[in-house]
Image 1 (tube, one colour):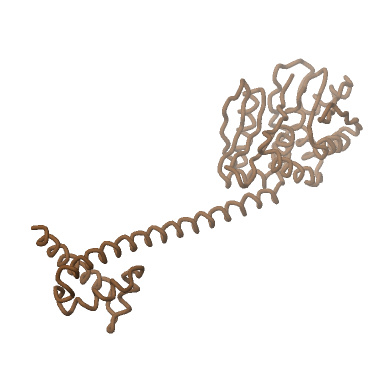
Image 2 (cartoon, helix red, strand yellow; image 1 turned 120 degrees about the vertical axis):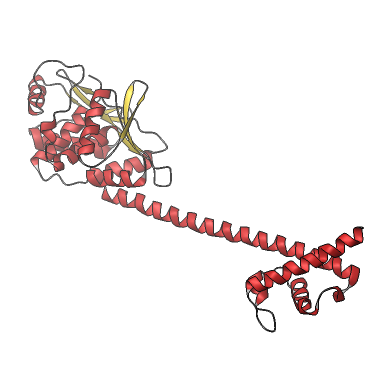
Length: 314
């Protein structure tokens, strides 16, 4: 029975490898959790049936952990084989295969797809260990600097649904899709991925994702602030340019006398300080005034200038 799809997206391999290496350093303290983790590994192996169990991986850390788990649970040492760029772990001994199937709660009848035995993962610690084994064989996670995405692939959709049910029991809410006749369990959103990695034991990688999210949010906030300030500056500059252009036209036609005396200081300050905002300009008066008061004066100046320009056209 062919189950696992071990290949990892090349774009995600760096952080996926980092995550798996952290998972491989999780202490194996409890026998029940060691058995549950090995169960997840075997259930998602390349081949898992009565005739053979075969697991292939590119990571030496994963291969060594599998050997360590087999020795701890079944007191048997299995050799790691080199197959091209991959490492292969194979179990062909009939007695050992029968013992493994019995330990996982299966009979000796052949199955197209072995269902998840929930008795193996009754405790939360065992469920987390099982998912750790599954992820080591068939999981990938995007780098924190990319769009948040974690997935686990399996060639049997029924098994995917059973694993999703287990994840839901742990408070993790994944989704599933089909891709090339295979099932894909996936998580999107940094919070969900952080929770899942922490659950499996990759708390450092979860923290790295969290830090990247905080940094990204900070950068986005700074960009928004800069964009807002730039937009305001452009608006201020445009408004100032229109006011000065109108004033200068009016001055050419009638001189400063066309403006009432109480507006002349405003005219002088506006022309002399084209880059200043209303707030800055309001503080330049001999008797500083409010922004709204200055805005009112500038509207009057614009009205006078526009009326004068209109008369000139007539």
